[in-house]
Length: 301
Ligand SMILES: [Zn+2]
Ligand SMILES: [Zn+2]
Image 1 (cartoon, rainbow, N blue to C red):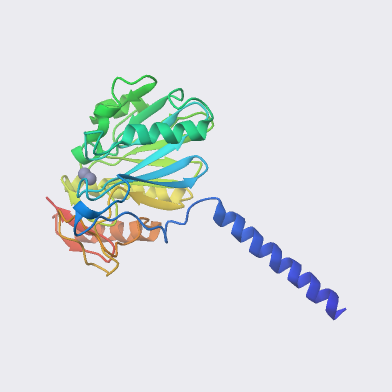
Image 2 (tube, protein in one colour; image 1 turned 120 degrees about the vertical axis):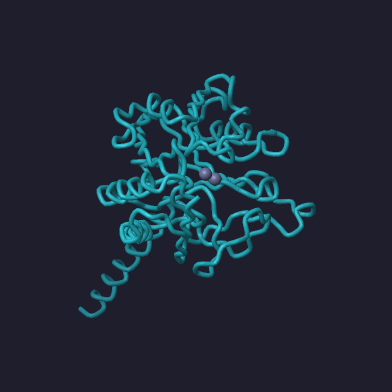
């Protein structure tokens, strides 16, 4: 009897371990993911110009090498049954220094089983600052590529947002849909994107482990409030922004413009982190103030 119980217990344990391993294997664990974070001497470093991390079977996270441009923005690639969506094109135009188009086409060729240039690609931007669209020139005029414009008006039309910024839009990739949530404040055309397949919430430069520069304080407050409400209504796996500017030491950032970020904070933020910002903004009220948090710093312009 005792022996049978031990056997049953070990079988249950084995099942639990294998289930948790297979769950973990479904997507990359971003808490432990390391990123190319530049170098004190960029002339001697040999890291990839574009770091590619496969998040799951049809989702990729890309980061521009910090030695090419200190902003080192992140970009996201979602592949659906009928088309793919690239969010942002990085901080550098020159394809020889920053080969984003060829990198994306290579990924699409491997993942879709089609010829790399056959899968239609839509390019959208987290917002209209240059470090997120400088690479657009590599994509414009290419076969099967649509680049959505940079203004709020163009984003609204392309994604079917009935009323900006109160309502949401959608992008259908074929058996995969992303919600587009207007979040002006950092910049007029800022959006968040929510992927129903991975439950990733992308928040651009509005909410990330770094300097949250606020151009329009009132709009920013309202956007963070709507974003928090959205996060409460939906399952969220990770909240992902477009830069890392904070170190692993709480409240300590890197100097702007540095090409070396040793000991960077991890990329993902959580819904609790978002709630913290939301309630702090409510307490601060209408007068913009700079405020340092453990994982990000609010900086009114
Ligand atoms: Zn920005
Ligand atoms: Zn940026």
